[in-house]
Length: 428
Image (tube, rainbow, N blue to C red):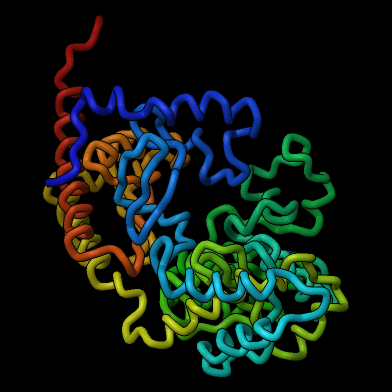
């Protein structure tokens, strides 16, 4: 296997990374304005904490170490870092201007290309800059369209009050969230058809339900959608994370289960900030009425990048291109977990869009001891991950085999580690 770092190398090749970390924590809380990228989720001295540049499936940290990237900017770069076709389109637009005093022509072009990809399923869309804004905008539209106020939330849908309230343990004061939020947000901790049915039966004034469809089994998702439709509850799919990584028409298209409002973001502009809400004209026409807006929603650079992505997508026969190899890797991992007798301890979760291995008894993925073990071991092989495995169009066959072999070895190492710990004598 290539790109192994020796024990000595690991101790000496992060000098600038560690110096940068010491300085940045004095200036930027958590070390990064994006929490999912924060150094606190990494293991300084074992993994890089600061990137200098990235190209295709690799990035180089500020010490000059090259890494195979299995995070891909939280999945926002499905076409690979610094993709030439996207770069050229962005540079061309940059010369023309980035933000105008009136609408830019390419906003319409971009919108039409996206709607065309969904083959007329939706009539209108509204752009914004983040997934959190897109889903919150969809909730506002649903409330205005239905004349009702309550929302059922089932997963992490962004940092805004209505979503963060339930996701982060129904805390209000500690999160700076008004206590009254619990009157309008119904949080379901472990989404399941029966729980949602029970809530709908006991609650009145429910405007909408927000679902992350790739976290559901297809059959159960269909039951939930049918139930909510029968109760005139507007269905919102939060495909901010899954979206483009699941297929050309997101999870909704893969399952052929369609929401009233579809929210997409990550990957739309290959790392540049862009999100959108898609829906029928009679609902989307309320976007202005509810004041769903952002000063930068119509800036041209992300729109130009999105247009380049749509053109790439249109010319790609099978998407995502890593669907088959990622599925194969997952099958190998499942078999290895069975072979090693680890199925009572570890579970493989996710899809070809993004997968991970988690300790069954550990609820918090960030504090999972297996995650720490795996992330550090993967770094030893020159592979960067925070625990999730997210690929891109630029990951080669050889690189995917490299990841597969590393993961299989790590499972074997974990088994041996558990065995040795079990054999240790206990103090009486």
